[in-house]
Length: 164
Image 1 (cartoon, rainbow, N blue to C red):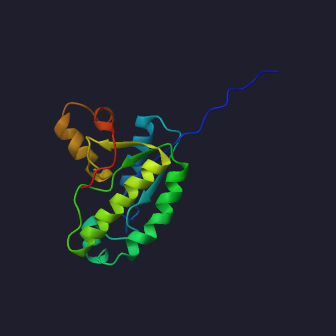
Image 2 (cartoon, rainbow, N blue to C red):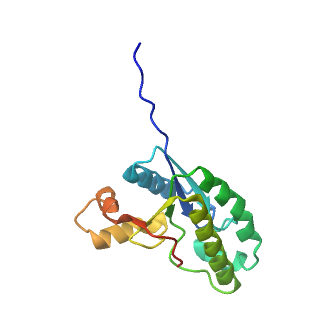
């Protein structure tokens, strides 16, 4: 009788800003590319803010109340509990107005959760760039490389969570 090697399932979590109002297909394709680049067997997404907006700039308006921020926490915590690693990809710009402080509080909470779960953390060139911005960054940094090859160069581990 032959013994089959058991492949260990490893899970990557990509933490985004908030749910889209569109299909989010391009973002999900980039998330899948991150999974392949880092060598994980599965990938999931979670959001730092729970209310959908057409653009992340809309978070400034609907994020003035802490409701959407607090509502995102159980999903984030659950996702982190099964993840082996995290890619921070919620974007580089803070919301404005009252939402800015809620965003900062959320990132502080998230940093503690990531530390509590002991998962490794990755970002594109040390910043939490949204996947929709990865190609722009890789093209500027490595104009002669195809996107997938350039992503390998910039999707790097970081020592901890960083804000905007």
